[in-house]
Image 1 (cartoon, rainbow, N blue to C red):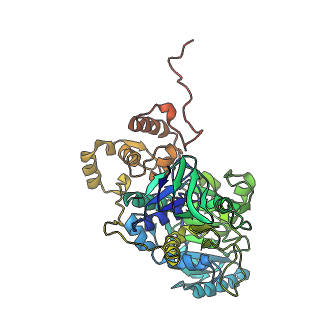
Image 2: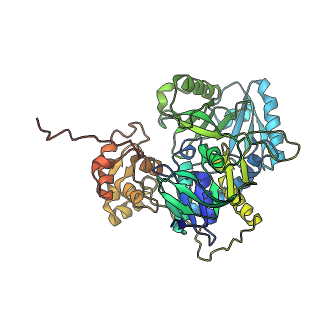
Length: 494
């Protein structure tokens, strides 16, 4: 007999994990399944890390509504979950007088969407606030509610809090199909067996359309992968303290230059429409396009400062805006399915999906209540996810105290980012254990400095092997088919 839950959530990205976290407040039994070896391995770990103010989405769209609603609660959510978050504001920078009208358009959109505090500043003021800006700047839109965050920590923190409040998480568990009682959800088939349930929340990201089609609904809905390529600059080469957007075009928000919470400058993304939902390769043409766009904002950027490149995919949908009178497609699809009882679809959650995730989660709860689900709230629910020590963020006195408590915090494993053995071990034994090199990297930022992990990787493999009680040959970079070691190089027979 299949194990039964009230709710099965498909997809361990930021939307699925935030939904699991908010639903864990209720008495519902919840299963969260993720096909990969860790949560947040898709768009949630490869994006611009921006908490958007909300002036960019078309007024009346779900993107606009969930963006602005979520932006207002990010301080609370980040505080409860110990998510690194800095509400430092952002700028849309006009270069040349011909781009100035674009700022007025965004200002008006933002006002219609309910974004507070926006105003246009002069070219002189923009040059004062960002000395590296293109001298041809003609003005900028300033939005004080914008911010930057750690997107993966937003995902893992929400998932950890969900697990601590009773949610079951199964990794390496792929959704394969529905168990239906007529046109009513009765369960799901997965790569790890069947699970009964009354609700399925489809937060499958790049595969949200395939999940719908398995239920025989929304044949017209299609996810189109859109790849964005990024570059990370060494913090020793240049320091950008602001979030700088270009005036957007029909292709999207454009290539930005932004500070990060880790001290590096991030540039990107471009926008390439693809067919393959797994294609995260970077291309010379794409990187050249990204670099050209970044230098339009900051001409002084030097290619010698680039220490890493990567690409992320956005799940672009084709849903129309449901607000009467608004002719807009590529909106979020957030709904109780009209044809399959018990199915909630969250499709086309591209930018500003990271920002909007908390509001989307609350909207899911509202949809369930509207459909007749009586949500009972647990008195035992704990919204707080305690932070774990970050050695390099502590003062010397606190560091010494931590080392006395646990000497492993005195052994430096990643020199560039100053990550200690104690921090690595803590992540391996966390509520959602980090069992691969990349899982530790995403949680600690280990391996992201100038050496890109060449110093720390052998030591991390050794620590993982020891703490997990497995052979070093079983330690992987990111799960299936990514083992680091193939054979011994010493003591081989002739």
